[in-house]
Image 1 (cartoon, rainbow, N blue to C red):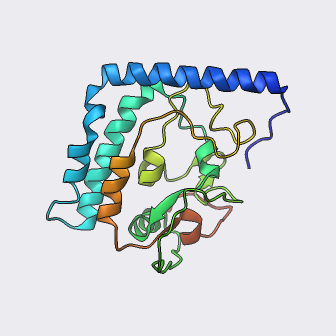
Image 2 (cartoon, rainbow, N blue to C red):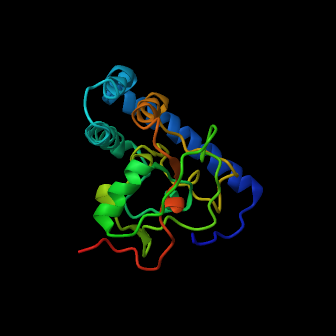
Image 3 (cartoon, one colour):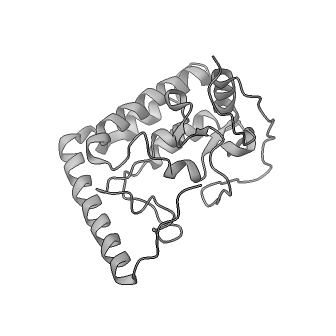
Length: 210
C-alpha cells in the first residue's frame, strides 16, 4: 500500500493543489505547442476499429498509438516508471488484454462473464494494489494494459496522484482521451470488461514467467 503522508495544514494543501493545477495547465499548453498532432487524435484513433483485421491486430495498433502519445507527453509529465500511485487505482481491462497478460506472465486467468448491463469501473476504489505490482514497480511494464499507457499527470509533481494528499475522486491534469477510449470500446464491445483484480488474484509473487 502507498506510504501514508503526514497530515498537512489545510492552507498548505490548498496551495499545493493550486500550484499543481497551474503547472498542469502550463505543461498542457507547452505539450500541444510542441506536439500539435495530439489535437487531432480522432481520425487516427477511430480508423483502427474500422480495419478488416482481428481484435489482436487492432489492439496492437492501438497500443502503438498509445505509446506514441506516452512518448510525446513524457517530457511534460510528472510520471516516472518507478511511481506506483496508479497501481493502487482501478485498472479496467478487457478479457482480451487479460489473456495477453496471462500469456506473458504465466499467471492463471480467472474467467469473467460479460455484464448483462452497462458496466463501469471508473469509480471503483480497489482495496488492494494491482496484482502485477512487485516491490513498488510494474512487473509487466512492457506489456502493461492500455489503461496504464494512457494515464498522464501533466503537473510538475504527483500531488493529484497521491491518494494520501489529493482530494477523493481527484483526476490529475492530463489529456482528454475520450476518443481513444471510444476506439478501444469499439474494438472490444463484445469482450467482458472488469478491473484487472477480477481477472488475476493478488499474489506476493508477481514476477513474469521466465
